[in-house]
Length: 252
Length: 325
Ligand SMILES: Nc1ncnc2c1ncn2[C@@H]1O[C@H](COP(=O)(O)OP(=O)(O)O)[C@@H](O)[C@H]1O
Ligand SMILES: [Mg+2]
Image (tube, rainbow over all chains, first blue to last red; front, side):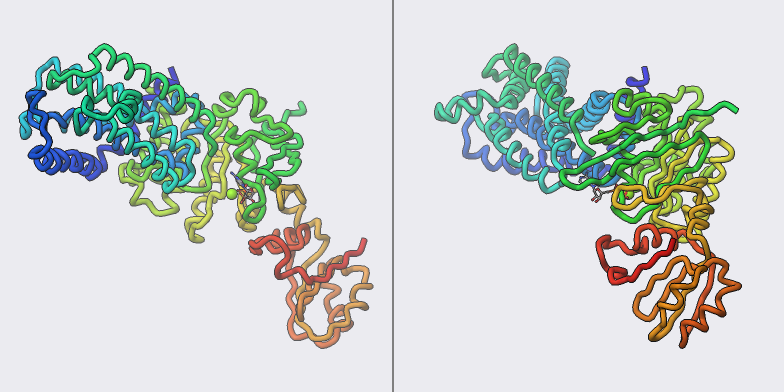
């Protein structure tokens, strides 16, 4: 019972803080919108995805959703480091709560932030970019996005728990984030890639989120929805386990 | 009278960071209801000691019992018994004072139907009722400290740790905080362990006091007894070419230190003997006599001023020390 109220407390903090920084929400939306507008229109005039039956802009929309999750949620781990710099983290750690509860509270908070961004993006996508949305596609997209949010937030928190400085955090995340993004098929169809590069796409869990989102929103399928979900569920479970262990070992 | 068990007890408590021994074989017993102080310069190991007692850091050696629970075996029970006010800011700037309290109450499992009442009570105790709905970004350093003090009490702990409760505050806010600490000690009967490197704070607040230096206790007693332990008054003389040999022989001169043209004496009953000392010492430019302060006690036990942050050597390295008895 007290672990549950503790979980609620941590979630409450994240949401309050999130809602008090409107600039954080706005800036988190600007980047994906720029990609859709500039990259989507610009490259769309060269890259042909005509075989898929959609415009290039629509084609990358699911990829941009995944990108928003990737960048936003990984970055969320930075707040752990900022909390370490003052004694706020100690205040949380000295409370009679399990470390795993603290970790889950953070994952819950970070994922909620991310989900709010995704909802806003999908509304903007439907209104201004002609993305077809149905009850089914929205519901399924949420499932996929939530799995990805939990995984990537856990990854960010793991890095935050291990690293001591914001600079170190930035270094590690940039090593992680760019391969995960560019080799996920977010921006181009992956079936034409050379075999050696294709291997990286196949072992990148983010690819399955992009593929799943593209399947449920646009009806363009690569791996198959069942495999997408399986990979994402395993990815989420593994990342949560790693993150919990990292939090248990975290030094103050 | 029944012999009561101490509420906090450490046995050879030790913490190492690689080669550095931050806390070195600490043995203390703290009794229920007292205000116990850890007085020492920066880096003496005060925060590390509190962190071990609060289960935030595992001891390298030795053991500690808080409210009867072993910090290593039953950390969760220990954490339920304590409140902690940290050295550095530990509240969320974007939240209001009341929201920070609410967060804390939830994390400590305070009963839902009690939360509002308890928040009102502690806010009143530290006079922050009027400012409770402002974001903490706008709080002054003193207000922030008061809120964190209130927060530490919210779950009604038996024991409260205060790590440098007035660090960086102006004198007026400092005295404010002192009065709150005294108030909650008498009104709420919590046991308080506070660390400080302000002599005056230790003197004003603490029932008993451990002076710690390089992770070790060098003296432990009530402030009054510590001062008395020097055995006399402190006389400071400014003089050229003093004849110290003769002065040293006087039986009521208990301790003598010289630095440059300044001579510091510990004199039993200075009022009666001062004339005689001045006669022996010769050409004196200035003289000052006063009762000892904790600063003198610290100097006596460690050979350094507490303000002397750069630990090793320094100003008093060349000091001549001679003690009798
Ligand atoms: N996490 C840590 N890793 C390495 N050294 C530390 C750590 N925490 C404290 N120290 C060192 O231990 C000593 C005692 O520190 P601390 O307990 O913070 O002193 P105080 O609170 O009395 O100023 C200092 O020399 C400090 O540099
Ligand atoms: Mg300290």
